[in-house]
Amino acid sequence: MNRSDIKSMLPDELEAALVEMGEPRFRAGQIFTWLMRGVTDFSSMTNIGKSLQMKLDERYYITSPEILRKQVSEEDGTIKYLWKLMDGSAVESVLMHYKHGSTVCVSSQVGCRMGCAFCASAQGGWVRNLSSSEILDQVLFTEKDSGTRVSNIVMMGIGEPLDNFDNVIRFIELVTHPDGINIGMRHISLSTCGLPEKIDKLGDYNLQLTLSLSLHAPDDETRLGLMPVNRRYPTQEVLDACTRYYEKTGRRISIEYALIDGVNDSNEQAEMLARIALSLCAHINLIPLNNVDGSPLRPSRRLKQFVSLLKEKGANVTVRRRLGGDIEAACGQLRKKASG
Image (tube, rainbow, N blue to C red; front, side, top):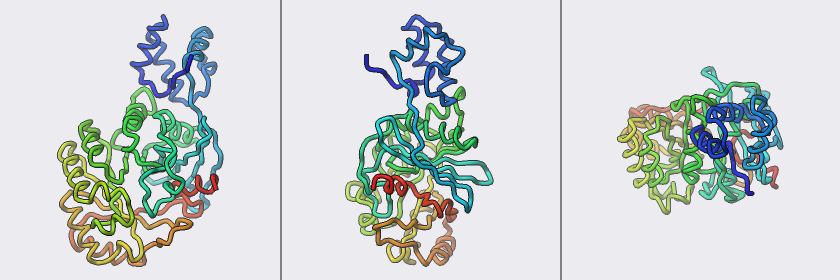
């Protein structure tokens, strides 16, 4: 019998499966609680009888990653994990500490097919989607290893979350479930390079998470040079989808903009970006570019001027605090080194 992934099941699905097995419904809540604690085998579920443990083991498996590498920043305590999955693939997640709590940045795919020029995640190509349980494990096992309670989640690691739509939605359902980790929906941020159909689909769910658009250029010509996805989905098409999303959900969108020297940091581009942000009622999150081996792109030397011009035009803007610089905390860099 081929075994199924039990950690990707919601409590009501567990209930139905247990009833079919001739077991009482209440066992579903016990099993779900154990899974959300990060147990790695059914024998660890001490309030479940051995006969049920055996039944479960015959039908299901429990995902559990192994730490391939762990790096801890001496500068700010940021922890970067490289996880080995059950099929031998590797993904990264990063635990960051802020005054308001601890945030884990999770990956949604093994590799990425979007091919953004400034990102290390795509350099090894796309391998496969992560299951909802494999995304969830990055939260569970980060908490277990670090002893830190995670209060916020950003889906900004390796992969394009909306390219793995169904598993990402299931992950969100699992991680926000009141009987599980119970992360508040407004404490989750999902970053996308801009897939209009999937943005529309996400809007239909009316989730109260934060949608972050990786824009990185205000015009088609520049954006196409940085992000090949712009060939299929031009900038205005993506912005129109974001407008529809805001109208459906009432949730303000965040615009991510990695400032690159001589590429997207001119005064004209700042003015264009400000107009876009104001039209979307969006917040701009400027990101100091991470140096990536093999890439000619470098961090902008005009950060202060760019910020001043955005504010002068009335845009709401912040500069992302850079964490884990001494451990190359930008996702994709550790996996690249391990595979290289």
